[in-house]
Length: 222
Image (cartoon, rainbow, N blue to C red; front, side):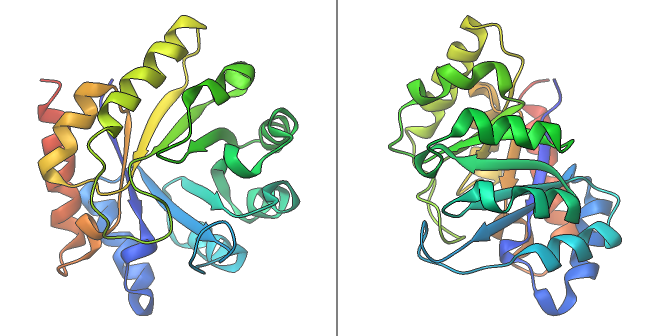
């Protein structure tokens, strides 16, 4: 399977957001990744439903919305209605995970579970039949520009092995510190979707940066 790129707007220049999203589209991005943070589950506040709605009207790319918030079940319907094509919630703050994933799917969105670096993959087994994707965090969530945690590559392999064992076709998404120097490594480990923020939007060349990241990721499976 050809690896896909999810351009995270966490590092975009919001004064020119429509232009920056258009640039990553031209560069070959497959998704626009939206990091929603509440200042409680993670130590940062970012964006919410109005931005998702505006993006839906701006881009043809699917919106991949990552909810780094407590009580995500209270907000998933609003995000789905705003235009989210994919919704991921964190297992660490989702005590009724089966119900939450079921609701996401009933709303017509792809359902995913995100795992922090220290969260064991065994937490996925009881909901594996509901998963469209698993989001492996390769940094501790909250801020862009962090350094990739090397053990994340092994975790990707473990997640893939677990999914294969239960017969799940769920994709694996990797998020945190992804750049051209480690893109091939994570793809070879089993990642299908690479989320990148600063690697794409920092430096003022999002189109070229997206194209370069995609080229490196694709070369790893040639």
